[in-house]
Picture (cartoon, rainbow, N blue to C red):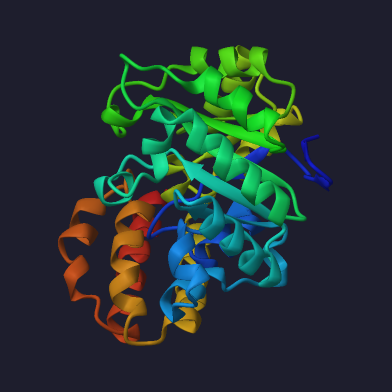
Length: 326
C-alpha cells in the first residue's frame, strides 16, 4: 500500500486536483468509487492568508472524504507557510504545493510551473511550509518549464532535501500544457533519483493505464485527472485490476443514480440556482461516448432547473434502456 508521511492509504490511485472540477461534491463521488486520496482545487496562498471568504470556501470538506489534501499555490515562503497553517486548522490531512500549473495568470506571479526555473525559490518555499506544517507535505511538479530547461530530477531532489514527504510528477513541460504525450520516462528518472514516494500523473485515461504506469516507471502511486472526470469508475476499475479481477463497467441504472447523486450534492453545496448550470458541463463529460449522446448534448442548454434536468435524464436514459433491451 501507499504511505505518505504518517498517512496510509487503502490503495495507490489518487484523484488529481483540478480547477473547477474537484470541489466537495466531486471529491465525495470519486471517494465513494475508491479514490485513495482526494485534493481540493488549487487554493491561493495569498487569498487564504488574507482571509478572503471566496478563497476559504475551497477548504469546505466532509468527514467522508478523509484523508483530504489541500493544494496551495504561491511564490512567497511566508505567505505559503501561513496558508498551510490555515489549511491545517481547517482540517487538511495533507498539504500539497503546486509547482506545475502552466496557466498564465498563475505563472506570471512566479507561482505554479514558473517556480521550476528558480530552484532557490523552490527550496525557500518548501522549507518554510515544512516548518509550519505538522501534516504530510507533498509537491506537484512538471518536467520543467520547457524542453530546453528540463528540471524534474533537480527539483525533486531539492524537494526531498527540504523535507517534503512525496512528489508528484506530471511529465509534460509547462509550454506543452496538455498537448502531446506525457513522457513517463521522466517519472522513472525521478523515482530513481529520490527516496521519498513518487506519484505519477499524465495520460491515464483507462484503468489499464494506471497499472501500466506503475509497471513501467516504478512509481508508488498514480494520480488520475482528466481520465476520471467523465469516468469516475476508473478508480474502482483500477482496484479490480490490481486485485486480479476484470474491471467492472457500470450499468445504465448505476450511471443514472451516480449522476443524480452528484447533482444532489452539488445542489446542496452551491444552491438550487447555480447547480443546474454547473451540472451542464459535468453531463457533457458523463455522457461522452454513450449512444445517442449527441442528441442529449445538443439540448444541454435547456437545463435551467431541477425539472428540466430530471426530464432530460429520464428521456435520455429511457432511450438508452429501450435500445439495450433485446
